[in-house]
Length: 495
Image (tube, rainbow, N blue to C red; front, side, top):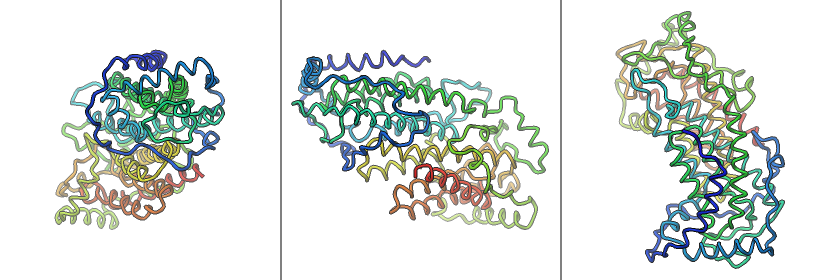
């Protein structure tokens, strides 16, 4: 399905501001919103100078000089805004409350919902459908990373132009705004930027969801008009800026080598043949493993550091004393699993039909962020560092998995009891441990008061796979070491 041109998208932004006026304002009171409207004490006025990731400089993206607030054009926009506010419908007020709590986080939620919807393995004999991708943990990590990077770079550019033009919000010209006042300049609209860039990225990743995402983006952008927070030219400028930067991120994704990660020629088989006691699929019937060439995908941080030293040591020799001690411990847990161990295994399972381990850590990040008073830009900064670390964790972990082809515990000993489904890829190292260690380190940097708790959660997430009978202790330790290394790379980038 073709993504709708952004020109139409921007034009509809403009058109919709003119037509909700015919609707009568309902008298039903709007219920209390799920989350309060976004407020912040620090507007991050220097945010336009923050380091970007994909774009070289915000200045390379054109944002036209806005109408002067004394101009006839701006005065006409104020009249339209006042009419939109006074004729606002109940449905529009509900939408305003929904998006006012933070567009970056709302689009992150949408991404997680889509990942969960598409996180299902193909049926036997079913050919891959590019419009309906399998949202496995590596695919999910890439999705969250591309979305967060696009939002962040676009918002850095937005902040640069906001403080270049310093247009005051419509409330300074008599428009009654239903949202909390801030000192942030209104042009271009950060909400329109986030709506446009998020729509473009997610529509590219989930083509079958284009119409759904298109309507979400229109609703998001127009809530700023219905609330009185922006005039139409704020919205249009934001949409155009978001579209330009989304295209730059899409071009990056087109060349990151993820499309080759499935190993269509199945060259992994030759490598596995050369390894004694190599992993084999536990599926019935057996199926090709998940993304054997994920380790070849472009990393966000220095590839030599992500995949280089310190590397996880090779797993223990199967049949050796160290290995036997490890597998005996896993077997003993399976035979005596406690209710608490079962609860932990299930809580962190994040399997088929969920938003995966990286998504679980995005939800944790959302909960932490909502307790702060962050601008949209600062929220995007936290999420892009988290999610770039999560995708690099996937790349490093999958590179190790297909380097050693280490068998799952249940392959070595059929008598091991497992309470979790056995994933269809090698055991060493643990993806859960790698994702979680990286995430805990990044989030602990931004939320130091929670750092100890986050590390405990990461350790629990790693142990959950042992409690479930599908990983060894060595898998957990190797993944933890790799994840912490990558988390540190992400934190160092932010400094």
